[in-house]
Length: 164
Image 1 (tube, one colour):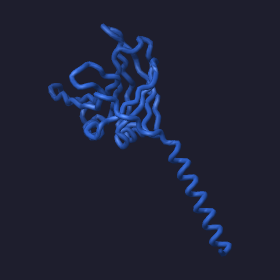
Image 2: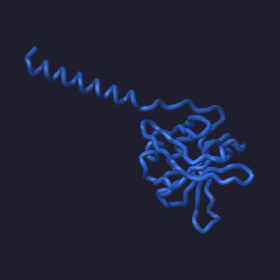
Image 3: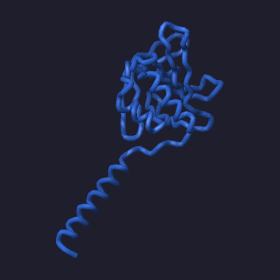
């Protein structure tokens, strides 16, 4: 083998090793939780149409996380019911993209955390649409939320609605 051929082999080996190590750093997709999926509801009775995307068990109020937005507003907000009244931030991750989201918790009948604005084109939102899942870390632990094939499509529809 020529000197140039050996050099090319080393370069290809190095590139392949770097590519594999980068792929290993991306978080693997979690399994779909039995009974849960991403669901979207649109409210067009108000002045501006709004939507909610929730990870939920259909027909129940079991909903560890939801997102809301106004149509075409390019602003998304995360919400959690029933968490600690002291909750001030949550962590979100999809693939290798993470975002710490701060917000406020109001207590009426039960605590409700509402995040500050998340841009509709934020890297986390784009990763969430591409991957169809995310992990949320709050004051109680980490919850993995993966969509079924239908749920993954609903995530994309919600983000298209929000970013218009």
